[in-house]
Length: 160
Image 1 (cartoon, rainbow, N blue to C red):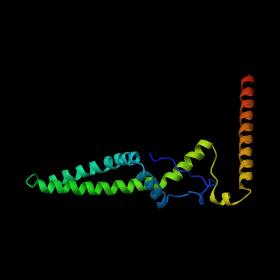
Image 2: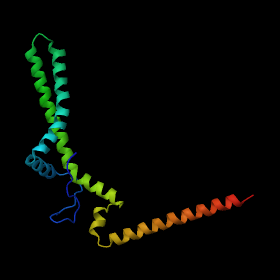
Image 3: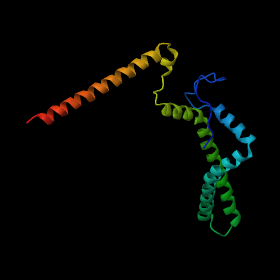
Image 4: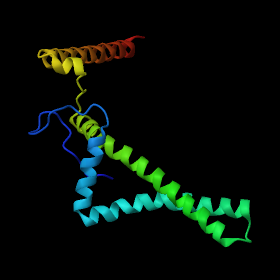
């Protein structure tokens, strides 16, 4: 799992709201990882876990197609499979790194138990006030419905 990234808009130094994955997030996490040898070792595990099975698949396919008479061709199949596996691993992990700030933002909003503002509502200064009023109305309606259901259940119990 990648380390958490400051993902909310109003932190010092932030200039944008992370609404989509961006390549520069991948570069930022990669630079952090290269500075820490432990992080590089942690990154090598998923790369290996993705690349080795694809390399073994390349070896098996070359064995099936060429046969066992030329072992050099089988090793070349292993090499091509490992290259393809490393390519797949780098793409998959780069996409995951590009999503990291947005995922951290979603996790923060989920833990805060708040619904996120839409981009149009974030630009509107009265949006937060209207959103709080809407939430209060929804809470009031839910409480009224619960009271009505309780009253109906009580009336049903008292009926002969």
